[in-house]
Image (cartoon, rainbow, N blue to C red):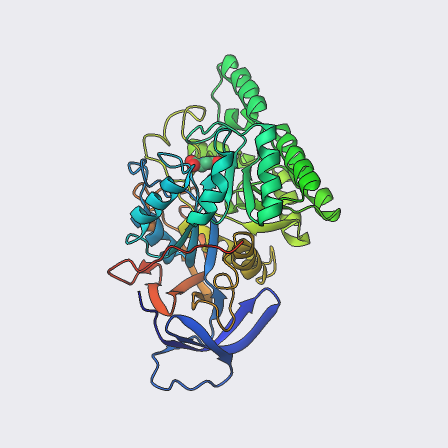
Length: 448
Ligand code: DOR
Ligand code: ZN
């Protein structure tokens, strides 16, 4: 699809290194010039005075449920939600049906999703015990990395054993790809879950007790050890426990290529909220006590946490109701991802420059999409999120594009509004609503 031409004039650019006023000229979908006082020369002009101009968010962690789980949500709804929330690239997880575990399934998934995408997308393959030989094939077919589910969660994909993890990280070292890990120890989760179930109590904190921090700590230690010994690159996604953060901090200070991601729900909710939200805020790993939340913020600010992901994980309303132990884990989150983190930054929880760093540049780098994606620079795709930092508004579940719109942030008053989402020079959403009638997102293939 041809890219657009657009001059974004007078905004304040926000990049990892700082903020500065400049115009951005996009031609045929690519940023061709950044500077003061650029003249339109026939291009459409978007007045961004008083606004922040951020790189479009690269959400490295979404589960858009297609193929196979469309009753939960689908790619059309998911990518419309992304566009509405300032996300211009999503990296889609492989726990769909069938799980994406070989080149053929990856190609078929890409074919299916192309033509339905309202934003650009990249695909991960899964790593399990039976498909180590398929990794090169999946890379060749366009996978930008791999995901290994060490703990049980939606899809119940069996975890790779230690030998497979080690060998995958050896390949990572050789070929340069990233392995993303769901970092919980399967057997410990199973044991603690059985223990909680045998107590027969399904109070709102039961899910939290069924997955204590040691589950994350053990997995993080194993991942960090294998990354250290192989030289491979590991990203531990949705870190919720302070203990796991400490493992990552120590390993990183020794130069090990281990990265940590956390998500807005771990930064903004705590165990105190289970009473109020119950299964609505159930995610794996669980949202933990305030001490953990404090450590996560510290890690965002000291550089231990290198990326943020939304972990957009929609389910049907039925699956999210009932008692917390039997409810599904995950919430639709891609649309609220940038708004929630903007609000946090504008209220001083982290510098605003952490947004382009943790939500655009770093994820794009880890998955071989940089600098085409995740960067406000000449030669990069013209993907922008333009934000009014003074606007205040209220998050409403009913405004979500998800098939089953639900969020624990319903009713939350936030600062900073995504006014325009621009995908390769074209305004794809305005003031939280999708502004194009046909999808124009494309499949992006990485470079490891
Ligand atoms: O809460 C979660 N939901 N955590 C995961 O790891 C998977 C996700 C899903 O796919 O539902
Ligand atoms: Zn996830």
